[in-house]
Amino acid sequence: MAKKDKGATAKTMPMRVLDEKGIPYEARQQGRKQFTAQGVAEDLGVPVAWVVKAMIVQRSDQGRGAFALFVIPGDAHLSLKKVAAALGDKGAVLAQQRDVERVTGFQVGAVSVLGYRRGDIPAYLDQRILALERAVISSGRPDLGLELDPQDLLRAMGGQSGDFAS
Image (cartoon, rainbow, N blue to C red; front, side):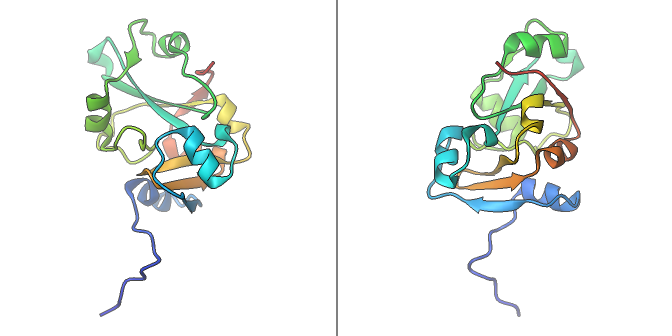
């Protein structure tokens, strides 16, 4: 029987998604659990913008899919006006914590952009991320980030890009 390598990191759902799609990434262990883009950036020694934030938005029109994912740079803020325009829903709001955890399967502060419990959540990537040298996404754990090329991130998400941040 083979022994487990004690230094190996157990694969999280986002890591499995990237592996299945053949997308290269580097697992980056953080010094401690972090729940903010600023904290992750400091631990990893990268610009805050590289640490992307996964923002779950709830539509007011439940019939067209209740939730959507917007991914923005760590140093930006989600613009609900731009979200409303993208979704065609002026009543869209940030989802409540309990809903975020229920639909993604991740703890708020460690929500990844990949590997959700539900597969019916459309994804939108802020175009500023595509101009970055690298992107760091949550692995689904608050102590481990996944660094990858921003173009690969868009490909992995299967979403569309646009202007969603301020």
